[in-house]
Image (cartoon, rainbow, N blue to C red; front, side, top):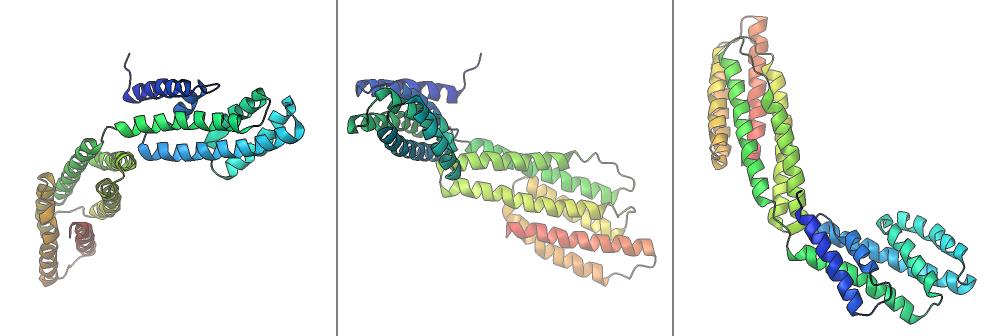
Length: 312
């Protein structure tokens, strides 16, 4: 049986929050452990958000509950009336995570059979014992996903390099068959990268981690360009000299991507302009098929230039 790191943190948060509430000699001190569980989330940012929503839920419940018990006395039906009023408010304010907390707070007020500063203060201290310990445990250590993000970036560059090599093979070899594996792989890596980068950003909350997420968003835009290039390449059914010239450039791009020489990719836009001028200097096509192939190759060149804009 494997015990995850989050499980360990949850157990520690529950134990320490109950110890703290017991040390403060609070009534129903074990409830601090429940609050710790409700507060502890997968990321630091999510935990802070949860703590805010739980605090709002507790505040609303204490306010409405105190008022209704004071006016209507401590009767069982009043607990239901409190929930009828509180739950819609929590949903409307986006604090529905605190419904369980509100229910327990209502029962605590009912069991106390009095509305006093001591009772209210007891609930507040239980709340902050659970939330405070949980936040401290979560803030103390959160494993960085930076290494995983970097691994995905490297894999993504390798898959893009492989894809451009496949495109070059198609342009150089008539009847070349490609299974398209890289297309699915690139799509999956982009989604994985965005998910990991987002979690990392919510844990570290620094500019570098935000940049990681923006990096994968940019790759998503580039992938749309790649898919347009794929559609255009499918129209090139014959090997022509212009296609072979483009294949050389695609192989050069693949080589730079594979070796991580991203800083040099922006310079390739100048080579694209040179190749475009060479295309324009060539004799005009003489058949419809040749015209369509040349038009597709020129459009691929334009898309390739758009792809390289991200590396300026």
